[in-house]
Length: 520
Ligand code: ADP
Ligand code: ZN
Image 1 (cartoon, rainbow, N blue to C red):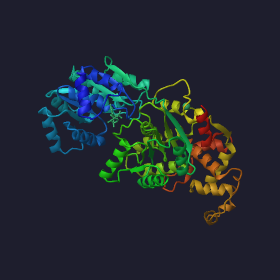
Image 2: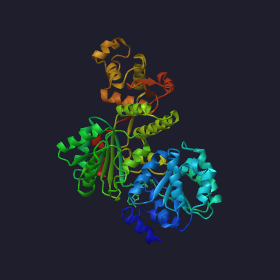
Image 3: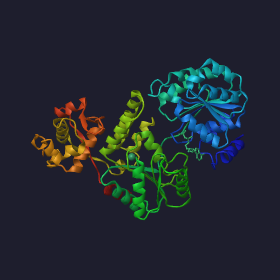
């Protein structure tokens, strides 16, 4: 059996070997047993059901709530010569009927289906009349009422073992906390199945996050000092910045290639090929890059802009060091990143509930940036994995963060936002605080405010740090109006009244981190 699976892995998917524990999972399902798979995003969950579906006779039925992705998933399977199709509410009746006919005729290897469709009696009748190879329940945490992805349709999936006894079921998720796991097992009746839980930790990756302060120069120093001849990925938010950064790195003597969805397919493929085949190529990319790339010796992943969630950060940084050798996940971020991401989020399509979840995720990402304790511990904690000790291989471990009593500074920063009417962005607020008489200051007569010049004891960089931390901790929010103005939240009252002391992070200089690294 296993030989057949390996054969499919190599000849259909074009991969060399299974990643542990994919082979064990495939074996389990091929043998007809149930399985629960907990694996980080990007870990390779899809093959765990796709290959058994091809090995076993009949059609593999994949239940997924991600209707928007089904089309792409199916298209890329079809490109590999796999007979795949999907059924969801986006299909017109004619197309749906054609898919059903294929299914009945036994002409499908894989069928993706939305949960609300699967639980219709009609669909069950349809499936009952065909040979089903297995059921894969993707995003299985949607069955948990604790998580924010709960889908009531998932609760009805307990009908599968009753209606289709003897057909193996494999549930997959990237959510690792114990409570969710137990809930999945109970609600989906997976008590007799095998569990596969891959740790989320990537011990060979060193995590570092610093404040932005001339990002290009910071990036150059980082590459020059630590990875001068290595392959790496530099992520930027916009296509324009991708191109400008790639060009600039070329000017500095590096082989840097741009990659984003706006480039022609041909050029994208060429750049990807060079990254895979040549040594020491740097890819400068938007998040469009990385799907399906499995280059083991990427030595660094650098972020010039803040990812929109911890999940995205983990997935993108996870492309470094797949070979297990030391690698660096390096990032610079600033308050403008937060402003930009918030604005993108607010102006995006999508329901209010969706936006709420996205805001929550961005806040968690900011929290990771601003913590003073071990980053790895926080990252793993986010995915539900508890580790007793600090890692010793992240910037906050290597250079313990100093804090300072920022209570008075915070009061000044907050009242400056208040007195200027909560209508201005961070740059103007800082000008007012340090007493810089710009045109804008004069235009609004802000030199007459009581907060004008009261912040001359700190420099611009320090004030940026104060504002960044106030936003990260929820004392200020970025206004959705579109200009990035800062507004006070309910929470900041205790600070303004002097009832709460604020210990702020003193931004360590990069130099220090490097020295520590060199001497360790
Ligand atoms: P997940 O669903 O866990 O987020 P995917 O199934 O999308 O992850 O896989 C992530 C990436 O890893 C994909 O690009 C996939 O092609 C690749 N991949 C998975 N398994 C292997 C393997 N054994 N060898 C090489 N690449 C793999
Ligand atoms: Zn650490």
